[in-house]
Length: 244
Image (tube, rainbow, N blue to C red):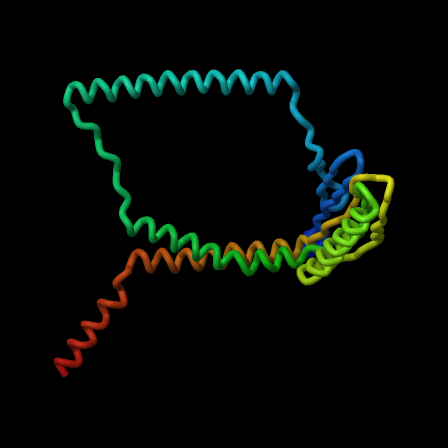
């Protein structure tokens, strides 16, 4: 009985985790761009990223300088060795040539992997939801005529972009304000939104992606290993017909 209870608790926890959503919060105002990613109560700050100390930067610069010096010394030694080999009349080993079949096989593997990955990636991207969108734009220009022209352009770009995005994902607009300011000579903007993706959908599509890519790669590898498998069967069948 206790085993079934533990099994039920594990299934319930797993279902709860899959019901959660990956949330990316993005905000931009006069203070700059901020982004945070989290799942439930847990999260990490993406932007602004915490920069390293000045000492670590100086140490990295010193290390890079030492590496460049060592690289120059090793390059000089290689050049001197090549000149000595040329003077002594020794032939340098020729670089290994790549066979055309290797390149074609690699290209086929890459294409097969891309064909298998595109449908699941499209499902993952379409699973994103943009919620709590708040956008505030104040349009200004050097004069009243330029301000009016910019205001029309900004309205067209914003509403056209939202209409296009609605074909790919669900969008929930909380507040959208576009105004004009004849006294300001520039465009000021601030926005905030949340991107949400259900973990169950992401995990299912990732498993589907891995399976499709693996199957297609195995098919291409089998074809590359036996490129003339279909050609060998035809003469055998023709010879059997002639014998009959």
